[in-house]
Image (cartoon, rainbow, N blue to C red):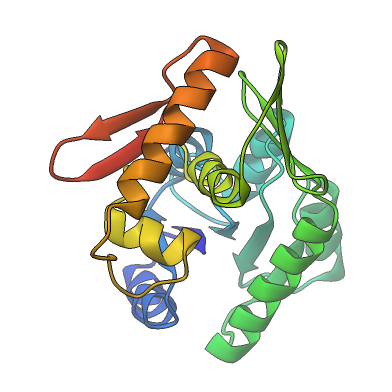
Length: 222
């Protein structure tokens, strides 16, 4: 999963980074509210771990603004505050869950999986400014109509949309789309990306997938 940790306590951050990366997750960190908002608006995350009290913009205000922007990423608020009124406020501004410090890593990971699972159960579409991906019917639709995709092309497009704005290496694509822990010797990744890129350009009139020499590919959505 792509996880954003928005927390100004570096000891807590370092511990979370170590344990979450060992669990196989990709982590970004923000040490103040302004940076947290920048990351949430710029990158897709599966979940945001958000400290209530941060320098500049508070975590509770960050949560509120994220929802005002229409971003539906799952949010777990981390705080030392334990009053019922605090929990009510957290949920009122749009948090999906609330955990008080100190907390165990096992409990936090369980809560992460729970909020992500609930979120996915209610998410049937992925939408960019150029197309809509129907996850139930496995269709890619634009204002020009449906883009005909085979199974792996659909899975690849879904992966790109979920990670739009971030360069994905061949190693990452091999794992996320094909389930390989290695880059296949064949050119299956290159060919699938090429075919998908062509279909998207024909269907949207835009070049949405860009090759980054020596690094991988990036999906760009206006």
